[in-house]
Image: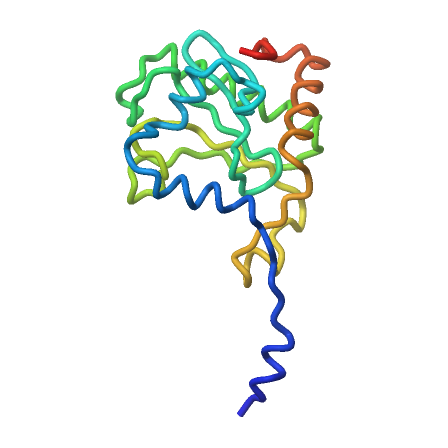
Amino acid sequence: MADESSSTERSRNIWAPWRTKYIDSLHAGGDKGCFLCRCRDEQADEKNFVLWRGPTCFAMLNRFPYTGGHSMIAPLEHVGDLADLDAGCMAEMMEHVRDIQKILAGAIRAEGFNIGINVGRCAGAGLPGHLHVHVVPRWPGDTNFMAVFGDVRVIPAALEELYSQVRKTAAELGLPKLAAGGR
């Protein structure tokens, strides 16, 4: 039988108080509505980490990322299914995916990417009513014991710093037209 005190001594707390905002947002109820629509409508791109806007879509950093640089591309229209998008919007979304992949490779030296769409709550969509594409940067060896055993991810850069870095790299690459600073 293992000594209970030795297992307790090996336990470590990992503090991530910023996650409270995410947990609270899950229980916020209907009065707050869709966070993508709020980010689309507010005049605060820097605060909301909106990177740029196109005619039918916009791109933003995920406020609750799986890894540093985790981005999302969403249609401006509040739709929850691919069948509800016209061909132009679908094409623009994929162009944004291509562009953010290139930008993140330059800005944070991402060497691989997980790119995906969760359609419907049972498929993992945290916001099933507003379709969006996730672009998750990856590096060799980035899946370590923290994520596997502790259900914990370590994000090494602050979102504000990453936001500036991504915008700078996008401008240097001439990709795509960035959102106006205060919009």
